[in-house]
Amino acid sequence: AADVRLEDLRVEYGSTTALDGVDLHVEPGEFFTLVGPSGCGKTTTLRAVAGFESPTGGSVAIGGEPMRGVPPEARGVGVVFQNYALFPHMTVAENVGYGLRFADPPGGASREERVAELLDLVDLPGFGERDPSTLSGGQRQRVSLARALAPGPRLLLLDEPMSALDARLRERLRVQVREIQRELAITTVYVTHDQEEALAVSDRVAVMNDGGVEQVGAPRDVYRQP
Ligand code: ADP
Ligand code: ADP
Image (cartoon, rainbow, N blue to C red):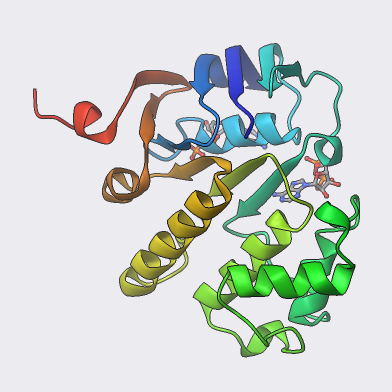
């Protein structure tokens, strides 16, 4: 598993400062959550780690390697966004296989074997020929997770992947995601505005506010009453 190190990370959009010097270290294999109110910079942080955003200052390193100039597809990062939908004209298997467009399946598996393995992992065995429109919201997000994991990334980035689901489904998916993360021991950075969710799933949390990190620690320490 890879670690992630952000040093004095800055992102500006015109005159808006989205990130005002973020320092964070995510340990290998850790489930690390960025929590905070809307607009505090959580998504921008994740996009900068993924390489979708060019920082105006500071640095991102994954597994000890500086990421400046490294394109998203070469970072070894899997991403699930709230609104990064499945392709409706492709089957579930084709959607998962799309995750392999930049990389061969790990471990010498064929594409078909890899897709079947991933559908088992996300507890959707036999769903390969289904049309995404026939799946529930939670099932679709698990297919998105399988797609993100297909190339065997060293880092998983999850941006509010549950926010479109109702409370009961959200809790179930959260447990499933955590089990998969533990099984793979993959370093994971998770974004949510929901404190309860952050408490329930995280090894550690970073509380963000107004483009910066206010506090980092185990959930019980961060949320202890003053
Ligand atoms: P969060 O994920 O915590 O809700 P964001 O990272 O999306 O916060 O946004 C941080 C700040 O950057 C906000 O002030 C937001 O309005 C601004 N911002 C985000 N994306 C853009 C963009 N593409 N153009 C201009 N401003 C943006
Ligand atoms: P766009 O190409 O939409 O302007 P960027 O330039 O920010 O977006 O992103 C560069 C590449 O990263 C794009 O080719 C796109 O495939 C990928 N990408 C961007 N945003 C996302 C996202 N939210 N989820 C997954 N992939 C993304």
